[in-house]
Amino acid sequence: MRCKCGHVFDQDADHESYALVNDKDYPKFLVAEIEVQQCTDEESRQAALARSSQYVGFVLECPKCSRLAVHTAGARTLAFYKRDE
Ligand SMILES: [Zn+2]
View 1 (tube, rainbow, N blue to C red):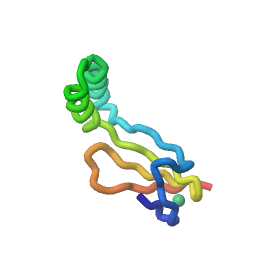
View 2: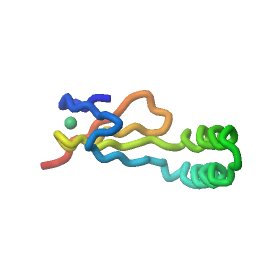
View 3: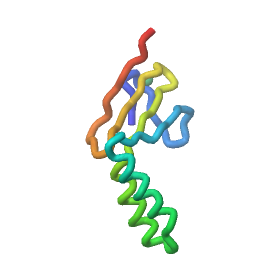
């Protein structure tokens, strides 16, 4: 993924990253996360993680220009927001 300023968000880079869950989905997300924690084998854990992750998006903060790149759960593209000066 690339910021509008050209910075590339690498997986091991120096940017901040946050999980993002819509308030209306939060109770369902919590139930799904509890199911993940209660799994006793890897196959069921992976299935539970897949169910839980459908509620999770992310926010990345660009270390170069401070823009936020927002990816809501289920979205196909990033939305960028630039910091006020
Ligand atoms: Zn940037």
